[in-house]
Image (tube, rainbow, N blue to C red):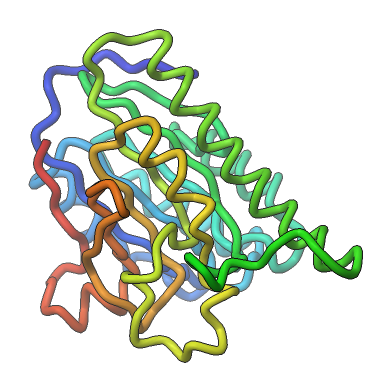
Length: 248
């Protein structure tokens, strides 16, 4: 777990699915400057690159030089499209991004735990570990991601007292924030397994992306706030520039 000393955080900016392209040089500089002026930390909720190309991550890394506040991020499915996850991770870490994958970082009095997450469906329609091995493997990936999230949150609990906990995800932990997408693809948009550690560890709020036609805000069965901060949703809701501000 990483720790960064900082005065008390009041504003968290969050956005997912920025899908940076190789032709985006200069496109994001003003965005990151404004975020830095209005927030204390920036969350990037996956799909940082458009097609998982290293060149796209290089553009993002350069644009992030305009960001003067801590950046906490997770990768998304697009970032793994070309099996360049390790290279993309290295590039962003070299720009001081706190890139989380089952680990956490403490900034001021807020602890951030992050995983990419995975699919599997929601509530009574959640896929069970039964049948062909490929189905079991699919479900096991979702279980593993939920366990990684739980472990990261547990370490925050064990090492810090009275810490406000925020979860950073790419896939959705609840059905409510993907409503509007075709129901047929719900199993590929997230999993209720991710909600279990949010409830158990008394997380203050969770942020995710991935579902571009979902709903901005929902909550778990235990009242944990969940925000789908996919850039297309924020733009549809009139956020300009497209980031969501959450005060803690």
